[in-house]
Amino acid sequence: MNNTNVKIMKTIATTTALLGICVFTIGCNERTQNSNILTALTPNMQTLDSTYPEDRANEQVTNNANDRLFHGDSERFWMVDSPSTLTPKPVVRN
Image 1: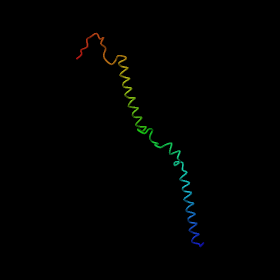
Image 2: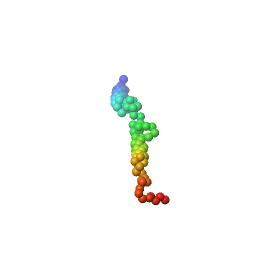
Image 3: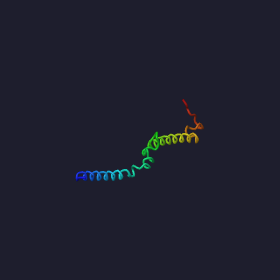
Image 4: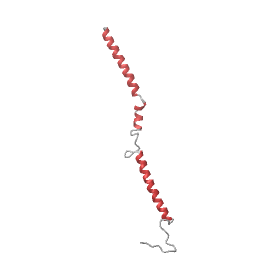
């Protein structure tokens, strides 16, 4: 073997070793392990059809409607939703 072949072999061996170290370091990174990827396929979504802010907004709309309905029901239960018919003076209705 002449001197040129030895230099080429050393260069190839060194390059291969450096590439192997880089691949090993990057390949074993915590972010790229299968278990981490599979546990959070869609990390920003709670469900497939809507995100958390959308779910929260829908919940708030439902709670608001329920509160307004409860307020109306309680007024009818306590009979304060309309004036009393037992007044001493007649009530004129159109």
